[in-house]
Length: 169
Image: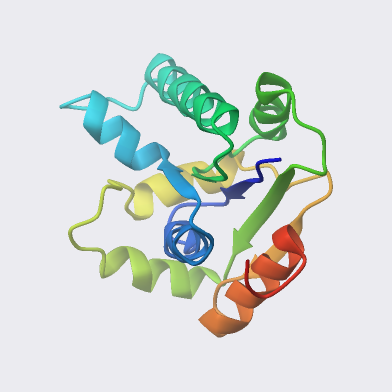
């Protein structure tokens, strides 16, 4: 049975870095909202209809991969509880298959990361971070909190243990 891991959190908290490592370590496919957006839309506007399209494409791709028995790592802000519940509903998953990882870290770490971004699919800067911070809803359901200012390998092992029951798959 496929496993889906949903990484959520504000821009700059380290979701993509952890998501890529989890996918690499487990052989899962990674589906990033930033990458999907850039592949589909040459000049993104980040309007709500565009965001809905990107999330719908993520769900379609995840369903397709799951049907083929492939684990997926979803990398997006998923800034509202409603958007995280939609994943569960659209994929018709139960909590045994879907693992939510909420990434956080101190704001000074986020600001440093955003300043140092290069060759990245994300267009998020401090203004985007500040806007998202005002509307972001912390995860309510079962999930794993990860402080990405802690050592990377510690967080990676914590996530693998949470989602797969062991440090390695």
